[in-house]
Image (cartoon, rainbow, N blue to C red; front, side):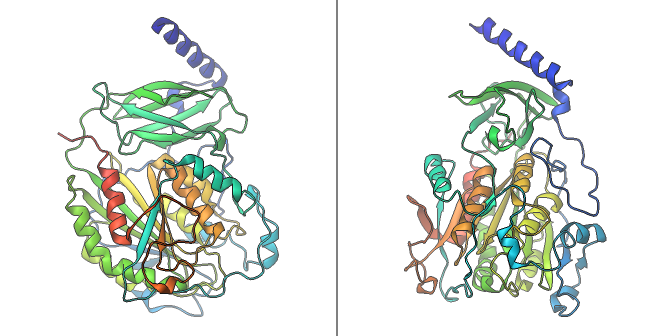
Length: 479
């Protein structure tokens, strides 16, 4: 049986090599060229345009880059003149600002871009999102759509007509990478390729796992995929056969595990006017979060980053505060963040997610990379720039897990998109809860308007610490 399996693997590998015309090492993405003046849309068969995480450290002062909105000239903000702030270069502005139309016409909502699942948009978008009471804690619940996958698929089916960027995740397979001694191999690069050239990339999480969704990148439904895994110059190969029930298991001896965990934690925050209370709570609890994370058993070397975004018509489209280990400087950055602007319901989440995935100085060498996305509105799908589905694929390739936090006023479309991003990247969906779900001003409680069940409730800052603890707790012990 073993000989037959080995022969089968060899024949499958040979067929992939002959069909693809290249060896397994060509599966790995090469460093991406600098983007041109326009944002390019990535076809499903093409590799995401990204470079693997490679920053050696985050020992830098808080650094800020701003991509201005159209209102920046008329209404410059005082915060824009802060000492460390600089405007984005022309290439950033061209990629993010010029890619969007001069105005977002209402008609565009009825003519979605390629790849969207259309749904007529209601005429009465929420005019005023209710605010939280400032004096009380923010409570939140959490669900893991990968753990309760059947319920998640039912949620998607119920709302299949809602406007979103479609990626088919109905068929998925678990990849588990272990060493010969049985330990998980975290942050290993993964390349999955079919004979027709369709390919995807991922990095294993702290537990040496990654979820693979063939239909999300290969519409031709190939029967077999080569799964190549590498780390620290060592490589191993396995095969995924469509329909198999067991996990794809690959053994890779990748060398010693670092003695201390490394955590890159980035907050991706909607900074429009309705988010003032959520931002205030994050600002007030940052030191608590940092202190509790630092006291975890792994005692991680932690870097903090922030990407705040608004919309095209505001004083700034986004502000990126790169990863830093200067907690005091990062607190000052957060203290300076004010909620303002917005206007219509949808915001520039697409552009901000793209910037977070591609422009943050993510560390390599085994770091655990987490994004906490805090928003109360969906992204604009009618702009011509980056799209969230392409960047959630790139996030998986970089080993970035997104934990989406639905704030007060998030509608079903926003919930759909946030859960898409979290599930695909291996994160979880977090949502604020209230004493009375229909009234966010009622204070903290257990009720929610979202379509979830079997969720636990705690304060938001404790849930963030729990998410970090759960991730870092999967790491093998360092020596």
